[in-house]
Image (cartoon, rainbow, N blue to C red; front, side, top):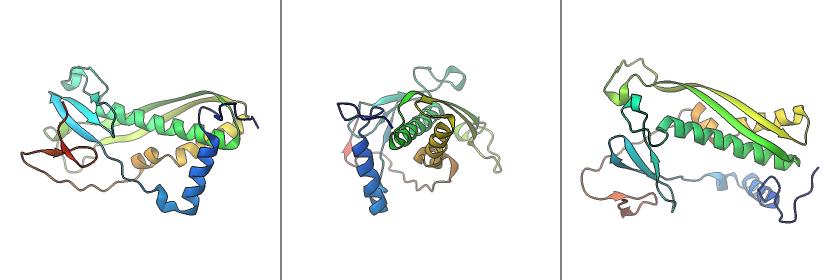
Length: 194
């Protein structure tokens, strides 16, 4: 088991903070129930700026084959990036909990997707199942532990990833429409972004 550094971090995170967060959610699992908000604002064409909390907006676009300007990743690529990042967070958390120092963490993802409905103006067969139907996940992991331990860390990270579970379990949706007027920001306040 490796000691934490002088700065109190291990694998780049605070292990005491991790233990405290885990203990709180074991004692009261409802503390782990959160609401996550974001807002998307059309810039032009298929360019959209996305706003989360107080962070600067980030661009999501489309490649030329999908009539975009290729200035940024497209929505599915961003979703895969979120998936890989969530798995990576889980790898670091599980390694830290086990006292394993990681020297390499990379997650490569490849998703098989059906977009033939062309956002609702293409092939609209009612039997069609749109979106990503399968994801290949390849984890590159190294650290001061044997392969069996690294495999257990990987399996736990994937099993308990909130984004993996978002991909693999259906989510319910409620949709509302406001015509004209203002719009709510990511915190629910009426505002506009540039």
